[in-house]
Length: 225
Figure 1: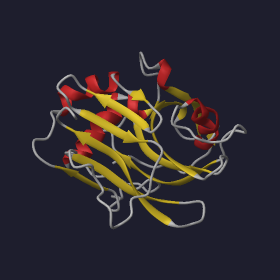
Figure 2 (figure 1 turned 180 degrees about the horizontal axis):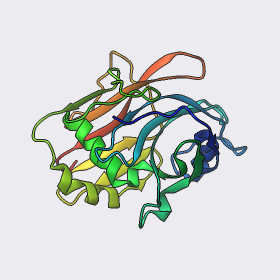
Figure 3 (figure 1 turned 45 degrees about the vertical axis):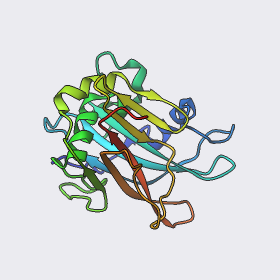
Figure 4 (figure 1 turned 90 degrees about the horizontal axis):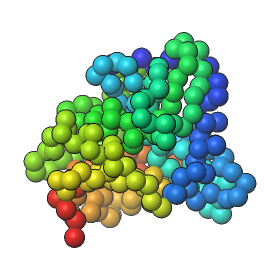
């Protein structure tokens, strides 16, 4: 299990995101720049113990309406070769030293573990506590599970951002869609599109302090019509 170090980060994660969020097509904030605040999320473990994997939810009140974003991040002790375009920034960790922070949708370690979570082979971990499962994060996978080793490189290489999120598509028709601009799902509405074959969902807090639940990622294992 990953060890969570409660230490000083320079710059902080939110400071890095203040510069990075406005560069994304799914950012809907105002011209004055974002005011991100941590609102939830979870972690996954890297089986090799080398890469930190965090799915962070941040809220932003800078625009005309409050917005919530899903920001998957990876933390590495050395640059990820060929991923310069996915670099969010670098920071100094009080225990681990220099860390390279990447948009996790373009990091094969995160994508592999996200697929493993959808398939039920790993469990979501608490965001801020070591060795503690997060049982509020839900997942499902119906039908035949995808072959993770086959898909990871293809999905990572295909990551494309649009106004709602990030889509990763493999040549065999498998598509992994991450919701970046989060929309709460009411209890009386279906969580998944009818053609979906897997998902990850979880809770987060609004700036007003209310608790919402959103779909984080959706898996499609056949071409969509």
